[in-house]
Length: 278
Image 1 (cartoon, one colour):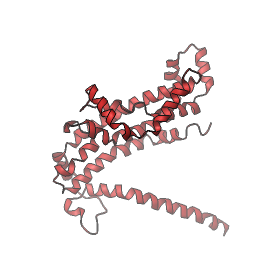
Image 2 (cartoon, one colour):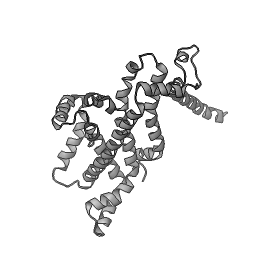
Image 3 (tube, rainbow, N blue to C red):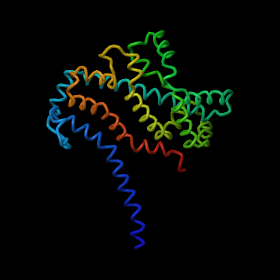
Image 4 (cartoon, rainbow, N blue to C red):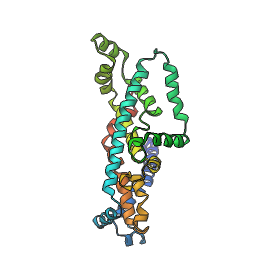
């Protein structure tokens, strides 16, 4: 009787979690199903719940209306380049703020970094656009790649990761071996903070991949459009009626994010829990 009493709360929690997960996952699944159905089947009742056979036809119409392959390539180029730059800058800054705490101006510089977390990005859009125009970077990818390379969150995150995972004794041992600061960063610190880097990489990639506002302001050549921006043109290009093609384009847009997260899940979780257990 006691065993049944102990198991009941666990069963209820398990069922509640399963139902909640289904509630959030089902719209994504249904979007994928509609991407494989004909437009005439999208609005039928009861709605289709299993994949259809019109995937290739839908992709053909999608590609004819919108160069989805080019948009994917543009987005992948911008997202990967931006993510690599974020990892490099944030890890270097986090390493510096963590190790050189007694350096002159450390508190002022780090406090300035933290203050940027409280400034809404939209507040700086107009000055940012003017600056990009002065640089001659309108309708280029440079603003999308370079802007945000030194985010306050990224620097703060990497400083916390370095603090919690790299023992101070390692610095002393490397110094005794004659290693310089950059050598220590590259050969000692980076291998240890890899889980934290993976977590930051997933976050940065997702933010860059889903970025819509900045490409909307900067890009005016449709051949350079990133995927979120290109998908907004899909309704017009498809005559506003090809719902199946729209669903397929949206599915293609979100799929790389899920794939990237799936491959980095182990490192991502390790990064989130870095330093909690020593």
